[in-house]
Image (cartoon, rainbow, N blue to C red; front, side, top):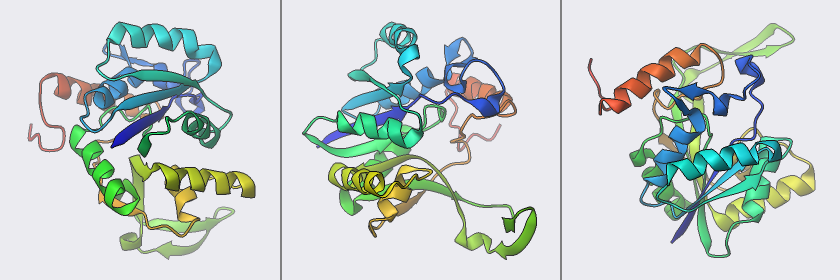
Length: 237
């Protein structure tokens, strides 16, 4: 079965408050997106990787990718104005043999091989699968700064990537969203609109999305632990 990974890396990273987009920030001498690519290049189920970047960053990214000598074929694709447009462009270039598509944030470099394998296998069986973790905080519904109500935590999940889908299902979801002018916050929200079942698998609180300055010290710690060969989810030190 042909499994394609799409990694959107076309964002501008305004929440990081820096001129350099967050995916290109260096941790330990390596750009964040490269750590992410390494994980997918070493994943058994993944057959090919599409890395979507802004056209202005193509040359810069190409040099970084070539220096990595990744174990899986990688193709750069031009990103769009939104994440949805970026993924849609990459999806349109998918080979005809593609059966499962995995979409993952470029700034989640602490994904594990086991997580990738689980979402791919679930997508094969169920059609769509995502990672999520339970909310440990109280969640309020707001309107213009005023509380409308409290949402029970047991009904809330904090969604992560990777998200995996059968190709035909994801293609249909993007086509429908485009026809309706709908903009979702993630790929699963597009699939949900079709009435399709999306399986939710347990993610990890270590699978962080690096989006703001306060995330960087934790990311540096996780990088050090990985280089020491320590299991991020089970290390007791």
